[in-house]
Length: 270
View (cartoon, rainbow, N blue to C red):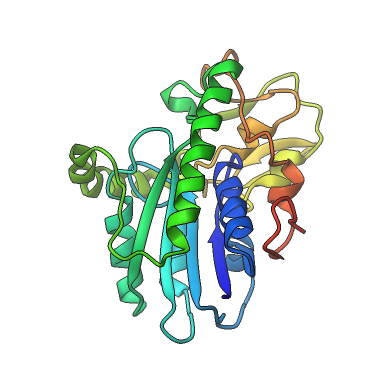
């Protein structure tokens, strides 16, 4: 049974989830949302279509909003979503369902997976030993999701705390509104080695290099890939020099900067 999973990821949590789903289901094509947004891809056909991405302010990232708004899928596939988050997914399933309905698609089922929290404005990632505990619990949860997906469930949503589900429709639009200006506090300190990885890994091309050093251009997605993957921890967002950096241990910078898609094998990104 054919499946397409569209994924977006900043620190690798969601790419890891997408890979595990592909491995469990088989016959699955993994497609980077960031790459698809830059390409004029034709409509894709599959019996299952999945969306995998992190939760931002109790809703989908801005790039995922824009992707769904232009998504064209032939036929009436089974559509599911899986979200990674540090706490509660809030209103993410409800917002995703509404976006898909505008494209004539129904969200059959959705799940959330608590992964390692890594948002610097909220304190960033925990210490490495705590990261390992979170990852072990997350992998158990992912196994449950893959098992459920094989049965084509309908109406399954796991958004977590219902209070955050109510707050999401209020907070999330404000977050999206302020996104373009959220990179104003980014800087690169004197440990910058001018490697250019930050510019390469940014999913929306928001980083330019001036004399080898990064300059942010005002269209940030708040994925923090530049922050967490910087090899010398040179990128700061305010007073973050002492924060732990994090990316999923099974995901490299090359995995996020590669190409469009891969055919259902974990670790196989172009």
